[in-house]
Image (cartoon, rainbow, N blue to C red):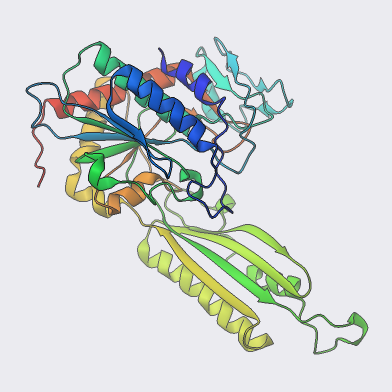
Length: 411
């Protein structure tokens, strides 16, 4: 089975996670895909296949006889889709021999335009897959799952020599909880790759330092006609807080290694309000400075309006994986070698976000990220090419071949 055929099957399964949920997984529907994958992995011939009570799927392919001393490589992808857009009743749209022009999505009438997505010109002649525009597609990261499963099928059906290959599929990556209960110790891999990036040939091994910040604002509501020097309008305090942040440090105004403050949620009335931000930076010093700025704002507002007017809570989410990748940089070098062997120029870019691999790297499993061939994730404009997925499968197979023929210091 081709990788894209698996993708078309997987996107039909509703697996959106929920960042307001207190359960693990955050949505029980993720088990639907987990159980489907377990059965498919067993049919392919993987061993010790299982899904645990937190919805983590595991299995492995034993090393070929004579290759038991080679590094054990893990391949990881996530099952959930982003809560930023509807992930239910996905209706994939297949565009054969794409003409390089704007794409109209049949369900919504929305247009994936060349102006907004100029990389489309490089996909001319390929077969593209989109949603119908009423939902996201779910290629993030069901394309990664499809590619990993196709790699497993190829390894087993073609008797390709290999070291031990460990497979893991996680829930809740999109809400920052994908690594929370990952069983690194029993996973069995020395090193791993998440398959959760964008264009084929992409290798990511630097990501943001990340934190969530919440301002809880306590206002004082009195009759507006008699509120001189008394009323504290929580909504206006919220605007004041946001106005104290650097106006150019938002997601819209930053790129590459530049960090940002992102107001992700705001609700309230005169007597109370809540603002949620995510804070990101690739540089740890600048990241800590951003947190210090928020704390300083909290201090100034409480001095101005009275202690207790504002309460700030900051929770760190994940760290930049680069510090954990440096000691085993062969992960990056071998991936580059594999990509170049296929005649592709490797793309090394910092992740302007996070993956399970960022946290797994700090849990003792060094884990850079590979592209899947998809674009415009987290919304109705998401798209991927059949040919890009095929290439990603070949890249992973070549990486495994390199490790099967290389001795790596496992200390």
